Every structure is written in structure tokens, then in C-alpha cells.
Image 1 (spheres, rainbow, N blue to C red):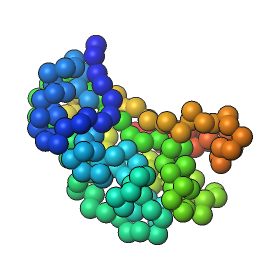
Image 2 (image 1 turned 30 degrees about the vertical axis):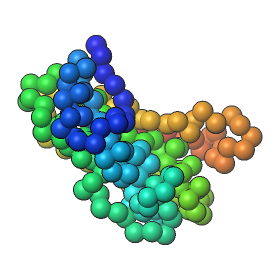
Image 3 (image 1 turned 120 degrees about the vertical axis):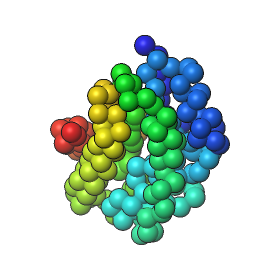
Image 4 (image 1 turned 90 degrees about the vertical axis):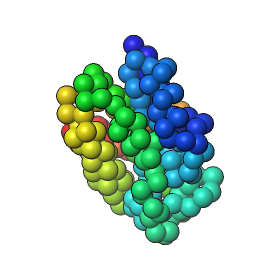
Length: 180
């Protein structure tokens, strides 16, 4: 079986959907960051969470900024979902994980601490569960494969990593344990 993950360079969501359908046996919901920066991995899942909002910057988030227009964040995903037949066997989706989002939020000015982790798990888990429910509603007999994208974990053992290993484990366990 062949699938993919994450971002495509397409500007047109229909072209991106056809690309996915033509090149995979398990379609994946694409992110289209060149179409709109809100589809980059950090703002797509972190915009509006824990006091961070969308800004068109390197990380795409800023603490203390209101949420951006969420309707533009999932256009790539939504376009492919509308094109899939109801008898699609499986579909793969990806979301930015809580450790990577926490690191980004700290980098854009969030004061951090336990409040950040509790808020992030609660709000991100709800957002992901809503996302999974929307896929299941559109494709009720389709297996959903969810990937938590956690590129920040590559620095976990570095001395400068700002989140304790036990907290990372707790974040991941809480996230995965609360998904439906």
C-alpha cells in the first residue's frame, strides 16, 4: 500500500487531490502551504489554541494574537474528502502533535508552564477529535489512519530542550489516550 504525508506544493486544491488519487493506494489529506500559509503544520493545528493566533511569519503563530480565519486552514483536506467515493477503504490524515505545538508556542511568546500543557492537550485533542469525526461523517465505513507529526521530538535529548522528558511522555500519552 502506498500513501503520503503532509504538504504538497500545489496551489489548486483540486489539482492536489487528483495528484493524491493518482499516486497512492491509500489517499492522504494534503496540506497546501503554498496556497495559503494557514495550511502550514503549525498554524493549521495551533491557530486559536491557548492564546496563540495565526500570523504570516516563519512559525505562523503568535501568542496574544486572535485566531485567524479557520476556513482556509483545511482546504486541501476538505477538497480531497469531497472527492473520495463513499466506499473508500482507508484514508490517512496527519495532525501536528502536542510537543511540536508546545515548542512553537513557547517560541512565539507563550509564557508556558502547566497551563500551556493542560490547555494544549484539551484544545488540540478536541480539534483532532472534531477532525476525525468530520472524516467519519463523510466516509462512515472508511478506516482512518491518523499520524501525529512530531518533528520537535528530534531534539528531545538535547540539554537545551525546554520540556522535561516526563512531561513529553505525559503530553503524548494524554493526547493519544483522548482520541476517539
